[in-house]
Image 1 (tube, rainbow, N blue to C red):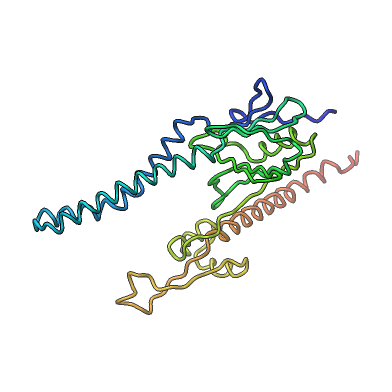
Image 2: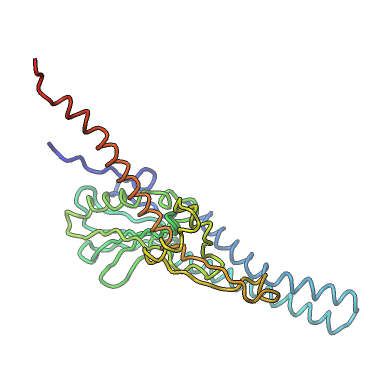
Length: 293
């Protein structure tokens, strides 16, 4: 029986007149708006409290020096916003990939990489490998990107805001790219990067939260954590640092704790399956027994 070929991921890859197109950024306008918005909002949010304080002090005191300080600070903020906005637009226009085309249909001979202002063809012989990278945090996807490793550079294709590529199944995308690029001997890999740089202790988990995730009593958390190599951290909470310096709390690394939760869940599922098989075994034995009559 012939093995079915994986179809193109919906809304991500589609045939065009020249070949297959992998859509990375659906809208240039939206992507530029996001870049501009972030470049304006971030420095403004940082400078706003200081500007407000300087304005209030200048109004109350009536000091020429404070008014001068306020206007200098305001001008610096505006200049920073303008420069940052220009830099963000330049980077977006020059480096962001809009789409990638495999041309022609069937057995592609070249890859066309389209950025915001220009497109550049790349011979298939210069494409070394393609890597689909999925970043996870506590089992949830944070981002996905397609990286093209060529003879002379590395091209990162990161999806735009709300782009279909950001929601595509990583394995389905890998399978489809493998189907397209396999005939021309280009290796396609899938890689998963798991976040482990959680801030300690603020982002680490308390015993009660860990117990809830593991579905065990709180007093069993320490033993399970030690058995499975979950790092624990003891510290004095800020609320007790002054009045009860001897009070300590224990928190656990959420990255490893989540992995242990998955291991425990799988072990329980296997245990339930074995128990169900044992309960069904006597019934099967009775049905298989020969009829004495």
